Image (cartoon, rainbow, N blue to C red; front, side):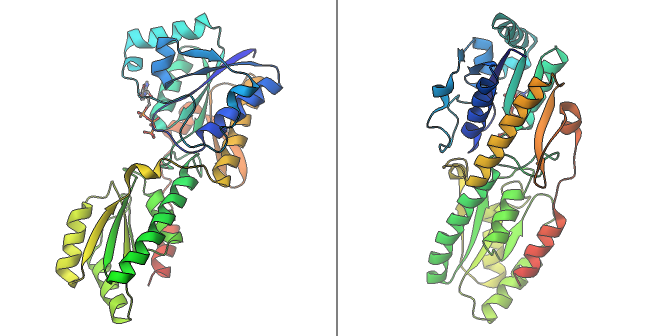
Length: 320
Ligand code: ATP
């Protein structure tokens, strides 16, 4: 393969830049010409395509966000927009495309595959909601951001002897809540994959208070059926404890990527180049244990059932 391109699409995630760098430098090392496409599929339609060299990706490894910018594109999902995107790939004689993004971006990649383009999907999303891979690029950084927020909130919660519901991102996948809750010692973790047991939450808070506990942290993923405000109200009503709500929001998306995310992004980005050099068919690249793995793109998108029940049980046991 002589000419490839890379784009970032959907929500941004820390480590996307490290992945772009690995793709660009990996390609150039093997004498493959590489283009950067700005603003995801929208930029592809608009021809926002520029050739990358070694210096194009200097000084980005440590930065959050994405130097290629990202976007969601409704036009790409129309026949006309899709054809324009295909025309652009043809104009620039691009044979392989590396797509860094989430589930939706991969589905876009699958459509391009059906039209004859080889696509390598790199999982760039803080949500960790792609079932085929243990971890996605950006997840570790987001968990660490939440962990640091838990530390700050714990200080003020203790001082005021109150409980706090911390709302984190995760509409369908509760992994940010689960991993941050476990590592941050939250009293309760609420995720969309499991039903909410209000009695158990209140019981734990009361038992903790009877032991002299000064604060309580309840982590709630945004996709959980009961809202944060409702939850805080129910806890206040049922336990008599003052309960505040903190919504962390977009701070979870930003920040310098952790070493873990930089390693993941670098390894996955280079794997994409290796596969393209082998003239592989379209693949989704992931990690399983310590191995970088790849699945057929469509197979990867059809995989389900990632929820780590045992980790949830462990968090519950350790937060008695
Ligand atoms: P995040 O996990 O951060 O939401 P994402 O990649 O899932 O990232 P989406 O907005 O779902 O984000 O998708 C990004 C873009 O991919 C869409 O704006 C659209 O252009 C394209 N896309 C999504 N789904 C499809 C589809 N079924 N067919 C073709 N293109 C799609």
